Amino acid sequence: MAEVNLHASPEALAAAAGGDVAEYLALMKPRVMFLVVFTALVGLVAAPGSMHPVLAIAALVCIAVGAGAAGVLNMWYDADIDARMARTAARPVPRGAISADEARAFGTVLAVGSVICLGLMVNWVAAGLLALTIGFYLFVYTMWLKRRTPQNIVIGGAAGAVPPMIGWAAATGTVSLEGLVLFLIIFIWTPPHFWALALLRTRDYARAGVPMLPVVHGEDETRRQILIYSLILAPLGCLPVLIGLGHALYGAAAVVLGVLFVAFALACFREREGVRAERAAKNLFAYSVLYLFLLFAALLVEQGFGLGSSLPLFWTS
Amino acid sequence: MADEQDERQRRQRMRSLAIAWALIGIVVLFFVVTIVRLGANVAHPLVR
Image (cartoon, rainbow over all chains, first blue to last red; front, side):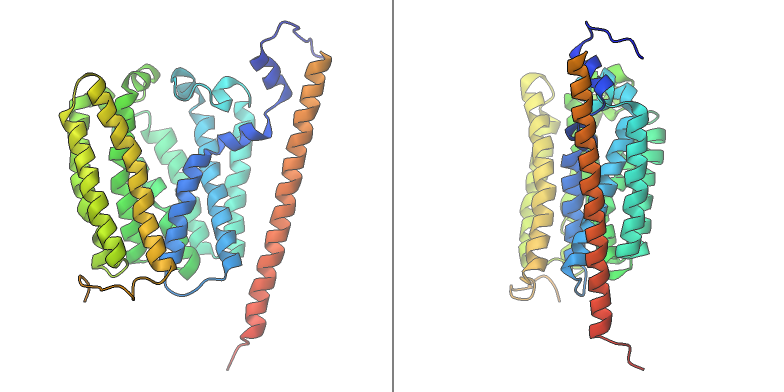
């Protein structure tokens, strides 16, 4: 029988007892899952034709579990980095609440299970995209890019941008231009979103040896890049209107939200020292989350309630 | 030692319950999806 240390720390006792259910759920990054499911829902609702609600729910459950699997496998592989960063040191694997082997097995089962279930219940195009997303996030972003290049989240951001396409594919069985446009919006949104966070955690990333843009090229260059991406993102957000996917409500939301995004990015670009600079980066990070949520919510409301045809479409033919 | 044993058993029980509920959920989801797909085919039979 194993010897028991009566003076062991609570963490050691917890590890010996195995992870709690809540800790396994925390491994799945629930907040990221929410955003993934939300954007996939928008892709699903915006797609032409109708989908049975049960099949739609099945698709969203599989996408949620697949996103969770990617989060688990990321936390398994990055446990060494997470342990060196204040923001992530309390995650279940670096804290010792769940062993790395358990996390890897858990993530693998969820990843394989979610792809197979999506394929069997909905269609294999959506399942293939989900598999591609999980694989890209794990092998390309987590294992390859994250520790090697400051462009890590630019290229790796593609993984987080695919969910609307998966939703679209779940509803139609195909990949379309509209799905690609939604992909592009999230793809261009990702760098300024993460770089705003990186500006707040530069020391953390440097200590962990992660070559984020502010660590490698400095905070001023990061602010410049944030502004450039924001200037691309604002008009890009209006693209759905030009291809007929979005209408008056979405168009108005895209313009207002885009202008505000550039304003926050500009404030972040101007404020370079002290508390004001920190506040500007914090504001931009918080607003970037709100931006994506409101932009896609506008599309969801418009498509879900059929508002596209009842409002004046003065910018579409 | 008894506390650790109790905690280990409690966590094991909770994990087992979570797995059981997840499996039940998958079975129910597959059942309902099958009925929906079957229902659609019955409602719209193939027309030659």
